[in-house]
Length: 277
Ligand SMILES: Nc1ncnc2c1ncn2[C@@H]1O[C@H](COP(=O)(O)OP(=O)(O)OP(=O)(O)O)[C@@H](O)[C@H]1O
Ligand SMILES: [Mg+2]
Image (cartoon, rainbow, N blue to C red):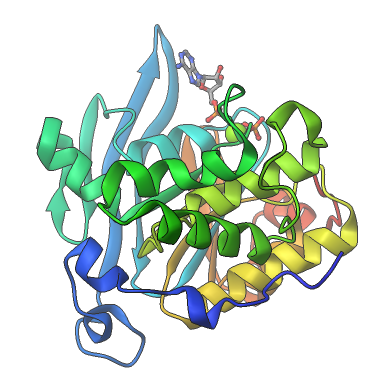
């Protein structure tokens, strides 16, 4: 595979106009280096199963926040709250200081437009080509001419190493390639906030490292990242801050080094694991 990030610098086009902010308002070192996301006392149950139990966390602008925890502890549910796909039973979710729990319709979709989201199962539309999957948000949210949309979608595919797959159908891709195509689609609008659910699950270690590096590069350009991962080496590489969810609660948070020294045995065990996937 050719290296993943070809052409990336050229491909942050006039995005600031798109998401309605000026570049240096959110760039590291610029003014406004505040809080991108905050969950405040979020509780969520399905039937009588309490999945999130008074979860409070915040993600600083331009930082990478890695959410760790065993299977079924509510990591994906947490991401879905941040993007407003799920609403808390109690508590609030703030994106850039705006309480999105109170939003719906147009207001919510405006907030969502500044966020990219890679679902855990990288759900692509099966009936359109890989390239058109990536182009989809551009067709929906911009009035760019077709040539510019295709060019941008192609560049996003190149960033994840899929430059030759534009015209393929999703069914023709491997699982890892579908995941990368999903990431390209999540990045299509150059979101200020990128939420990714297990970006390297199912990828070979070399591709997984390249995806990690791509995320680190996005962060260097000022993107705020929330990454759910079982891959601890990856979380160490990407994350400025890590948090461990367990039994619906954040049981530990801090830098990787701080988690290594946690008083909680399970947290220390987690941090020692090399597991991915
Ligand atoms: N839409 C839903 N309806 C009912 N229950 C749900 C729904 N979504 C999630 N759950 C439940 O919430 C719990 C947490 O699910 P979640 O998908 O957040 O886990 P996770 O931490 O992402 O796990 P994994 O690491 O396996 O992806 C699970 O018990 C799951 O069954
Ligand atoms: Mg999950």
